[in-house]
Length: 137
Image (cartoon, rainbow, N blue to C red; front, side, top):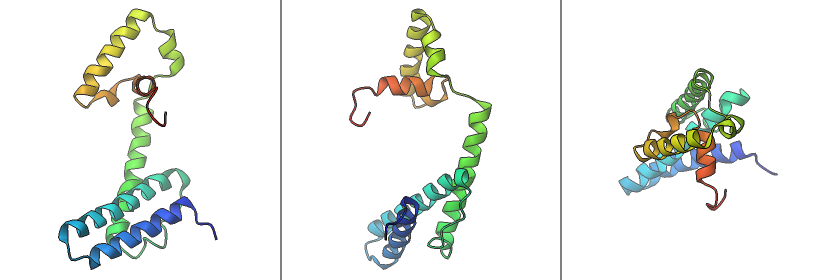
């Protein structure tokens, strides 16, 4: 029987949470619980677009339910932000003059260096250009 990616994540989250309750090493237990919470959050985030209900594997653990709901709210908020602050397209980028491109490219590097580059209109386009040549891109 093949399990879906979501089912595997939910099962992993439940297992990490269970292991966190059994492990004597507090730091390792905390890492396990954080991993479980991260997976539940991811599943909630993904469910916002698919309208899937919470997995029965998560539904009986309050900490996982909270993280799933938090992920779902974050996705809804992200969708709202995307509609309020659209990102520039590759076509728009290509239509810029070389001078404008150089100016925006410089701003991109400056803002990324201080951790706020993702607020730029052309962030997605520039990040794709910036990552060319990296493994997996």
